[in-house]
Each structure stands twice: as structure tokens, then as C-alpha cells.
Image (tube, rainbow, N blue to C red):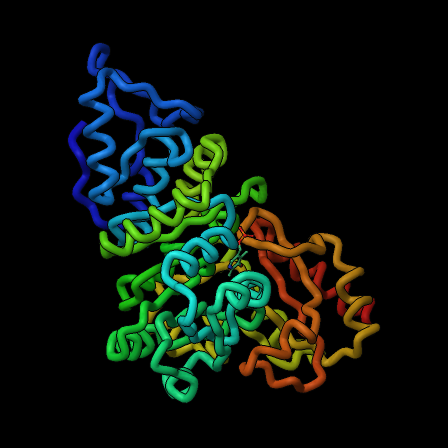
Length: 397
Ligand SMILES: *Cc1c(COP(=O)(O)O)cnc(C)c1O
């Protein structure tokens, strides 16, 4: 079989990271097996020396199991194809990938600009680790103007997430990338929402894309994994060196599960997105609904940016309900098809009653007294999900 030259991600996702043919039999399994190992053995010392020399040059070389062998390499290749990068480094969770990227890029005395719509635990990383190591952080609304007001001579990194956590605020990534370039800042984007399929920060000018594979890549709510993806090999070496120093490792079985999941990511995302749109259409007609936060929804404040920069959508949306706290709790408790839980990107629908304390730091939040409920719309029948929401709104009244 010759190699396909298609650049379409739907095709690349099915033809990247396959098992190599056995040179003797000319046969191979379609799906690469989970290659578990701690110890790597070498044919002779020349082979070992070549591996060490490769690592010194910053190449992906295995001398020990921690970096992972063929299964990991296959998944890294898939992340590179998805994100348009040249190097992907795996981490045991999305949060570990964020930590890895920031620790690799920062040192004592540095300052970071962080979009205030970023994933909440980034603030815990700041408070419990970065601060102790002499790195200071400023949280800003995700615009060039707001960042510029907080920039310092020692600012080194611009860290953003688009669309933002909880309210899916779209940021102007190309404008932010231009700004970062002008001031010599390394721009890191949390691209968990897009997962390289519907949004590609590196192509829009970012230096580093971080993805929680836990969400749409894995897709089945049974695995935790993260990846840091870059275009620039120097940056790749920096992150790989930090990965090595921190002793991070992803189980081969988890890399295998992620590879298994990612093949169907396009159809899962498309189906969730279509269901989410049907849910938005239902919600928009309800008197209890104050606002829908979903960039693909035409009335969303970020819709124009979404149309310009994204190639699709997913099942994530938040809805502001004109309900008091007790009624909002009754609504969530009455849902039968939406499990109460964090996370998203799996096959199932989820609901989270967003804590107003978590929204306080988001400048995008109007703080209008409405309860915010975040939904992940899964692969159930959209009409069943809408009937469930309808019943729960009745129960809340
Ligand atoms: C879930 C999530 C993470 C963290 O991923 P884990 O694998 O749960 O550690 C990071 N960023 C965003 C936007 C997320 O939704």
C-alpha cells in the first residue's frame, strides 16, 4: 500500500500511526498494539551511542521506557498531524501538559500574562508552584489591549485558552499571536476545545498548543492524557528536556486507548455539535433562558471569530438561566440523561452547575444574577436530550 497524500484530517486520522509491516512476512495489524516497556535493549553499543547522540540533538529517541516506544510515537504523530506541529510530547493528563509547558518556558523572575478565561486549575498551578519558584502571573481579559496594560519588561509567556473555559469566550488568536511576536513572548494556547480538529492555534500563529486528550481525543471517558505540540524544534527540545527531568510518563495502554479513540473523533465531534445546535434551538425559545454561550450559535458574541477561525464545533455549551439558586439545583437534579460531573468530550451528556466563585475571575461573565449551567451534549438522541431538558425546566419551576 502506497502512502496517501491527502491533507484532509479525516483521512490523515485513519492513516497516521499505523503498525509497520514486518520485514519478513510483509504483514502488519491495522491497529498498533500497546507496546509496554520499562527497559529498552540495544543490539550493540554503537546503536546505544547513536541514540544518545540523537537525544543530545533534541530528537525523539528512546533509551529507556519513560519516553515510550512505538505506541507513544504513533500517538505523537497523530497529535502533530492534528495540530500541524513537528513535535508532540505526551503527558499523563491535560493539567500535566499545561504544567510541563509552563515549567519548560519559565524561570525565576519571569512574568506570565494569562487570559482570565483559562481553565481554573491554572490558577492553582500559579498559587502553589509558579509563585513559589519566583514566577509572577497577571490575569487579563483575553484582548491585546488588556494584555498590553499588564505587560512588563520581564514578561515571557502569553497563555490563553480559546474558546475560554465555562463560557466559551472566543479570543482573536491571530491578533494575539501578532502581539506576542512583536514583544518576544512565547504564546501558549490550551486547545482542548478544538483538539486540533476544529481549531488549530499553531496555524493561527501560536508557538505551543496544549491539549487534554482526556476529552475529545480519548472520547470515551476512560482515560487521562495530555499533549504539548510545537512547530519549532528548539522549543520541542526544551519541552522534551523538561519532560525528561520531571520524570513524566504515559502508560502505553493509555496511549493505545487514545489512538483507538482519536480515529473516530471527527464523527463524534460532528454528531455532538449537531446535537448541541438542536439543544440551542430548543433553549433559545425558553423563557427561563437568559443567554446561550456556544460560539457556533449565531447569537453568540464570539460567533464571527468562530466562523473565521474554526472549522467546526463540538458539544460544549453553557446556558444562563433566570432561576434562583434553589430552582437551578432542582433543574440539574431533575435531569435524567445528563450525568452530574466535570470533564467532557466523551460519548455521554454531562451537566455542571457552575459555581459563581469560579466565574468571578472571568471578565467575560456579566454577573447578572443568572445561574450558569454547563452542558456537554453527547451522542444520545437529540430529541431525547431536549425532552429531558424540557422536563427538568418544568421541575425547576
Ligand atoms: C479538562 C481540561 C484540562 C485538564 O485536562 P485533564 O486531563 O483533566 O488534566 C485542561 N484544559 C481544559 C480546557 C480542560 O477542559
